[in-house]
Amino acid sequence: MRSEVRPGLTSPAVAETVSVAIAGSGGSGVMTAGEWLLDAAARTGLYGLMVRTSGPQIRGGEAAALLRIATQQVESLDDAFDVLFAIDWQNVHRFADEIPLRQGGLLVCDADAGDVPEVFLATGARVLALPLKKMAKAIPGSWINMLALGVTGALARLPLDALEEAVHAGWKRDADVLQSNLRALREGVAAARDVAAAPHERREAASPRWVLSGNEAAGYGALRGGIRFVAAYPITPATEMLEWMAPALSQVGGALLQAEDELASINMVIGASFGGVPSLTATAGPGLSLMTEGIGLAVAAEVPIVVVDVMRGGPSTGIPAKSEQSDLSYAVGGLHGDAPRLVLAPTSISDCAATLQWAVQLAEALQAPALVLSDQFMGQSRAVIAAPALPASTALRSTVAANTPDYRRYRDTPTGVSPMAIPGTPGVTYTADGLEHSEAGVPSSQAADHRRQLDKRLRKLRDHDYGSRWADVEGDGPLAVITFGSSAGPVHEAVQRARAQGVELRVIVLRLLAPLQAAVLERALDGVQRVMVVEQNHGAQLLHYLRGVADLPGKPASFHRPGPLPLRPTDIRAALLAWAQPEEQRP
Image (cartoon, rainbow, N blue to C red; front, side, top):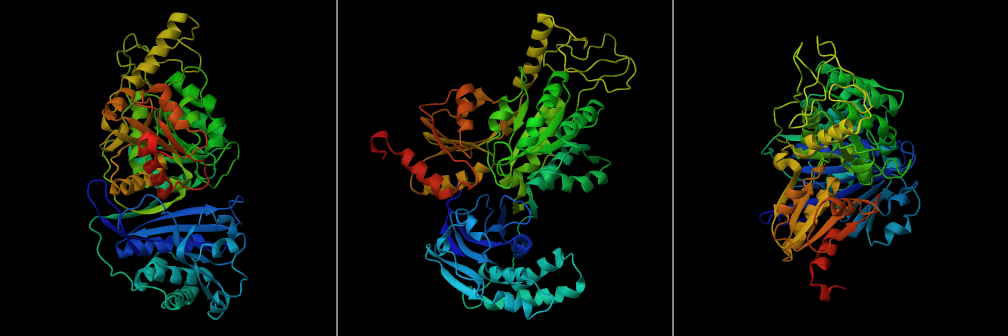
């Protein structure tokens, strides 16, 4: 591991970090090796992040597990990789942009797999050629990915016993081949002995650690928030959230139903929520498009639902297995008519749990749809994190008692929230549909009714007290960086590095995107002279959205790049340093 001075958000700290990529053709087991490597890091008392990447085939094509292991919690990949372990060269060159090797890094490959692609040799990396296939063949029943686990584990300075424990814990195949693969693991460790440093000593973690993906964290937060019904259609990269929630829901008395498509999914969750059960669906951009009319129905009928959009490269089918923050404009403005809705974005894998829990609570309290923007980077990546502190509260929906005199479902209350009658409650029957209506729920085309209901639906979201959770605000100074979602990780690291070079920066990571807390944001920017907005999409969607609904100081700058390449701290840092210079000194 390299020892790097990485100033913390409030005080300098030293972090040791190593970045490892394991790549190969589909079915070679690179993801399994990566997950066990991450698990071994956690068992050693370290932190880590594993990002999955694959080709356009999603299954069966080339794949790579990208890992960063560190002594402190990390939310971003590093600028470059110290090690690339190539099980084979079949299409691995397609990941050349995603796996930049550090100058003097190490490339481990099969000595009999042919020439190393020039794109990797051009980095000046050292090559460690091993007879991988022959080594695996000499141990009947073993697999090359176990050699990869041993080699990369040794290079990441992970103790052998931690690696073995990770294999034991994750083993799901026949027990008779376990010993063969443990032997292959040890052979891999031995093969790296000449180039690996001494392993870390295992240490007890100061606080409980979790190893999970953003999709799993989101599912857990949804359950804590009170979700008890899920209807969804599988779609990359949201499917793992549904796979995790299916058995978990059954343990708390809930249920998950795989619908025939996204149209059915959104209508099922609206129906279940109308019946009084907090409900959720999860999808990606193409599925969100199909749900548009249903979400509008939830707005008009004031039915609380949660829709999780695990964003991927677009438009259309786009790049299913890669990350991009390009559904933002659609989420905040994509419904027809004046249709206010909640839009939230978790700030990290760890924050997925808390933000989903909050989204459920807000949807239920405000009787409105809540769209949650995760993305492939957060959703499918796994991380070793400190167990997050989560509130104990769950969803609370305002409901009406039986036989309430003069009950009006859509009564124009001061807050805009009207008590909801659960079907079957005597004496409070009402009609709920997508037509505009009077306060009693009777369909109406009268201008006064339309205006009253528009004002009511807007007011209940606009005037709600969201407290301090609308954003994470940190630091001070005349320059501010605004970002959201998975961009927060590389932004934080870039800001730390820029501060080490004397640049004072304030960071605002938005969690509540709609309704945007414009007045609160403007107070958070008090004393700021200039703003830079950082995001991962082609059209600078967050910048344009903010300029449309808030007053930003000065002439806002933008750092925006589309996927599939992740945002890297070094690029953001360079942009910040150039932008921080007086205008006459900028290149």
